[in-house]
Length: 280
View 1 (tube, rainbow, N blue to C red):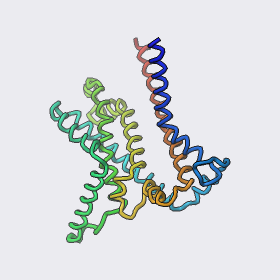
View 2: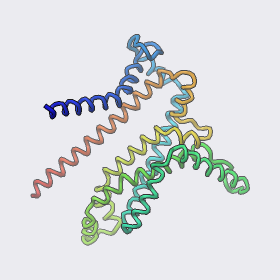
View 3: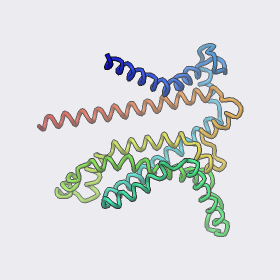
View 4: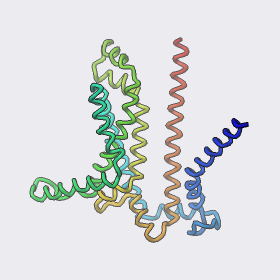
């Protein structure tokens, strides 16, 4: 009897947890199709907010900036973070521990501290650039936004790729060298295929965090406006249902990417398992 009650409590907890996580998203999706601007009563189905979204120049401009910064910063951070993870993996155990702990600081550091510290760095650069004619007077705007996003994304790449490197059998790399590969060929033919799922996962995390970021972007964007900053500006008055429509589209796109990525990973795992059974 106790086991039955325990199972019921576990199921109830799971249901409440997912309801707490996903009911607000479901609510937003439903009201993106609402006829009126209100969000307390559904008055009828319409697609007018989606049509209005694609004619709203300010929202589209902010969305384009967010996507541009997210894509560029995610690519650069993924490359830098993967290179850093490879470098850390080649260190001794004590050095790995020290460097990993240092790398972990930006992850646990409050975003407001990261945002302000980066802003102070860029302000100091501007003061230095005034006396150096060969430097641009200001970089506040898109350049500082990109640098800030790369800076907070790199640690997430390191923490995604490093565990995969630790799990990898180093003898595979050594065997490739013994069979005639040079270090570059061994990396691209042995190591990179092994860690590619972790790299893809890190890239998607960077992309999501960059699009989502508000605090660090707010302090380092200059006159450039990202989507979270544009939405924040709208909340001073009232959030337009166009934002519900845009958020719904973004949610569905990200959900589709995650599902496709998981399906590809699952297919790769099944093929590997099948190949292992056939070899056995």
